[in-house]
Image (tube, rainbow, N blue to C red; front, side, top):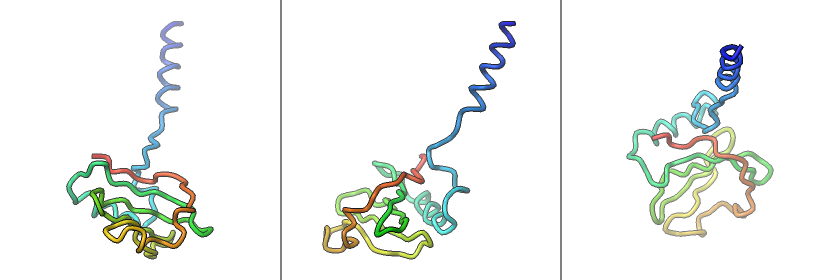
Length: 114
């Protein structure tokens, strides 16, 4: 009886585990995959590069954070991967998306797993 209970517990544990780290490339928008490939060819960064989803001006956008150094820029793309604008950089807010501070964070869709 104890073995059956233990086997059931292990089965439930294994089937309930999910990988929610946002690193499943199959779940990413098609045009984001080449960006991830490029990031993975770069040296590892601290903090790790990531891609975040936001709601900006009533549309879903992706913020690519892959230049994690002082004055590095992030880049914002639309759902169809059309480039919108840079964020940060040496010019600071002078080159940011208009009113991006009002964008609503949704989730991190990918983080460099290295």
